Image (cartoon, rainbow, N blue to C red; front, side, top):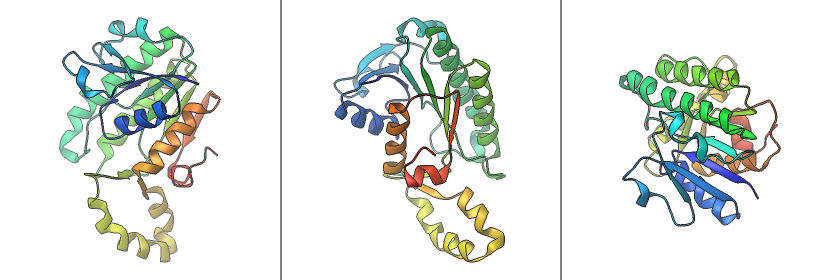
Length: 217
């Protein structure tokens, strides 16, 4: 069984991932800011700290644990460029700093597909910088790169499915459609659990096809 330290554990992906990890018998530690203690489900060990300041939680991360970085702005859009910098990037850097000091065995970062898109370029730029920073800390890293994760409260892209079908039929657009394919929340939780339970490597990148097929290679 793994010891898993999670930021963003009360969010869309985090709360579902924690539920599965607890069912599997893993030890789960969730980082929260003061006042949010009640938002984590029973069975999770709570660490109250500032997710933007590594010094406030570096000593609470068990050595050789798996660190999962999920904290970030919900529902990315063109209007949230500054929030991405102030929340997503700052928290990723603080987490990487703390994880490196603590000596974690594996650092898992939910990033985004890097297929060029003007609509989410600011989000992609921040996540790319986050990936680069994590690697600069000499951590064993896994980057998971979905495009959009379908699930409760996140269904609107379903209206685009006919366009995806058309793109599949046109060779010039087929690769782009694959690089921006939708994944489900169930697929994301499954692949995250598999990555957590896998032996760490210096760098593993999980693209959309891996998420959809629920495999690591």
